[in-house]
Amino acid sequence: MLRYDDRGTAESTGDFGAATSEGFARDAAAGLDFLLAHERIQPARIGILGHSEGGLVAPMVAAARQDVAFVVLLAGPGIPGERTTYSQAAAMTRAGGGDEKSVRRGEVVLDAMLAVVKDPEPGTDVAAAIERAVAGVVAGMTEADRARVREEREVFRALLPTYASPWYRFFVTYDPRPALRNLRCPVLALNGEKDVQVLPDLNLPAIAAALAAGGNSDHEVEQLAGLNHMFQRSKTGAMSEYESIPETIDPAALERIGSWIERQGRSGSR
Image (cartoon, rainbow, N blue to C red; front, top):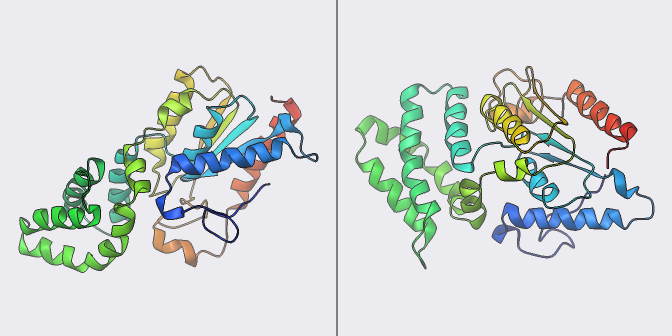
């Protein structure tokens, strides 16, 4: 495996806060170039594994090159970022015990926020514009709903820099399907059944459809029972469970990934 520090960490240069997934794809491509030139690496057998956002980045890299032997997508998105954002918010609300009214309240806030994020006015303070837009829709809510939003305000404000960042704007406006359609190497796509961040029922069929539409006949897509976004065995899949689960990753998931990669090596792919 090749590991490297994020931009701006340790000896890595660059500004992480100003980067987007597109920039991270360039970083991963540079790592691939490094491996291709390494004397201890077989250049025809290098693959890319990406988890979550990495599952967005990996197809971006592999679709633009002919020297990637295989791709493994772990909880990678197969639908546009905006749709992922709405589905994720609803699933996380339900996993946390929220009702459908809570889901709808969150959608109203997202509507206002994304309208700013997707098309900010030139020179505007995006964070301030998001706050104004959200305040406007909250003012029109019932007192009970306003009180609930006020309870969530500190979390919202802590995330404002992310919502106002170039990274978030790229994510919500990016459609991963064209890159998936252009993948020519073998692909393994896995999702946990209880993933509330990248919903398997929405994303796995979209990934399979995009790969098939592009003519990729060498792909496997599977939902793993009982696993969350981190591929841990979980009760609800809620993010609050991640740190309380003792296992880092379910051994069965590791076995599934490892055996598939081993088969790619035996078959001499690329």
